[in-house]
Image (cartoon, rainbow, N blue to C red):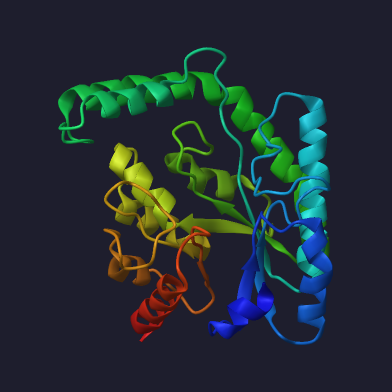
Length: 291
């Protein structure tokens, strides 16, 4: 696996939330032999024993079940330990979601879009009214979930600090996932001074949220720029599918690149079915944007 990525011209790689425990010995050998360097990992990495497919939300920091909370703490600390072992600077983390017992307003929004394929989403007036109502329902419900997320994050900060690993909190693409974009900056500012944390920007997720009418991509990046530590780079096609070749969809990567700084991590994150040519083209496009 590592040799394939190195063969495509990469000196650094991110280890994703799809790394099974059986792959770890080979990864460690590749690092020890100097074949590759690890820029970052993605919680949970490696996957818990017995889990054989990508599962970044297997346990959530927002969970109300104390057993799930403990599992999130355990496996997040384990991910931090592994990141330190492979000398990665950052662990990318998801921050949970709001769970609805009966009616998830996010599904209501999706149903509206499906029923009105010719509507100019997100500018359609009826859609905007529904979006406003749905966001109000989300805000009303999210309090306990968000408080548990913040508590969970605070419980792993000391461990990350001790191991010399940053936590990169990633923006999400689903309506009910936390935090809401307008809460990100206040959340990061509320953490202890010197906490090893930052904002991780996923271009595809932000584009999907913009298409839903929930954010303005550029304005969000401008707001979060002081806290940025890294990017997941991938495009979104006309059908709304993300993790596509950079430059093949409608994301404005010239705009995105204006926010890149020398200290940021830039990670190409693709659908596993993307052909090798798409990976090479994406790498070339990013190098071109870097000048």
